[in-house]
Picture 1 (cartoon, rainbow, N blue to C red):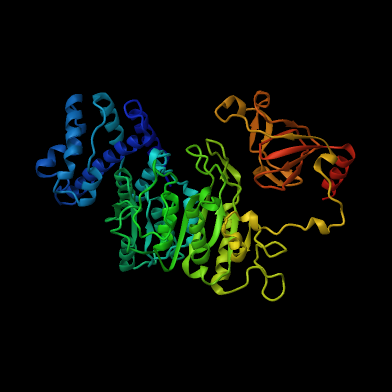
Picture 2: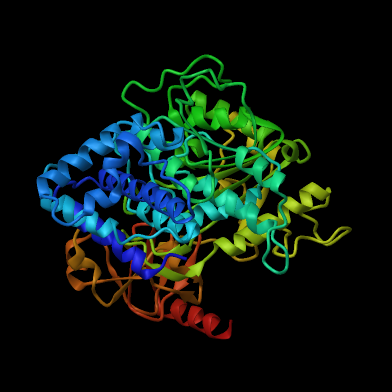
Length: 583
């Protein structure tokens, strides 16, 4: 757990740099270099206290030792010149291991202001390294300031989403784990912690032997095309106990030299964007495409061992786009790899991107044992969908994790997952028709029908045969005085979003009796946007995302563009009110 003092020091270091180094990624790099610099000197100091000798700052490099930088009487320009020279020359230092030389490779000081540097070094001097796990947590907090990495289409994956995927895939101590677009190594760190926790006895002691720990460290690998990301990954893994982390600067989509390397577990949030003109991959991919997200999913599927598993975050285009490459990819997945799809809320990557994403769960062996694919939907991930992503009480992830765990466990044991009560019992978390409460299970034959292999789960939900019902069907307009559309006020205007008027989306509707607004808008927002105020006593009908949801409002409310407000005839309203009160 990150302590408050360490968090404050990191925030202060960033505040000092922001005037001279406005780019968050560059701030992270400068703090990383300084932390490792002091870390090496602390190791030397510990060695001396134990009767040993300095190795990192010895010989010609002794003059760059940390105490020399922060000593009293050293002028501002002298400090600046000494530090700038030290970090530039550090890759030549024969006393540091190759990992540290890689970290300092191409490092430089991007500003020439002595006072900024002296204030910055003073804060770094306050860091101590008496607890490696605390240092790892501090570095992860530092990495959390990274958002979009711009043209490469890289986005920091939220920690709770990473941990969810890792818990579902459940990597084991003897399995090879790979992230082919590793960024700052978040998936690798989470997998490592998951395995350590899974191999802990009742007293909290590790049950891993020294040989198993050595094998575990050697089994983790990551690739990234960006040398900056490689540097940050190396530091992150090192600070979490990896003495020799295996992170390579490697273009997964255009290079072939690692094509024959396979993994038991692959976890990734690949780049969502492709450069202008597309990717120019080599010809060993099964699906020919210039789209990075298509190629990455293809690469991951093809590089699983026979019992391999994967968890991949993908943009919605992978799920339903009708281009030939997308359909070929989905066909390959459904027939050979795919066991489940988890739909995530559209705001997971806020404030950096509003892109809608899903998680593809692959299991090469399990996919051959079943003729079905499961679809789950997460409407709330424990945070609101605004730019600040504030924590909220509603969180579907633990429940979806339970359902997924039971579903996959039953498949592995060869048990039924959709029994109607005859023979094997249905799943514990299933509804009366045997389907999961947070999703549905579809036959591969239905998914394949028409050749689209669409992975939008709602397409395969069994619908009511209204033609056979005894109640006649009528147009909604026949029982309403008016129908009002919803709208979304501009999220760029904060004045619209600090009011007291509830504004709901389909995700806020629990059932016909209950809605839990997470956002509130002002009267100005209603006047300036396309939304309408729906007076209490009417019905909200979801007409787009979450199609079919209904809510009879007992309070005045505004709605998003996904919904419509049905202003009911009085007698119809009374009937619905009675139904609501009677349950």
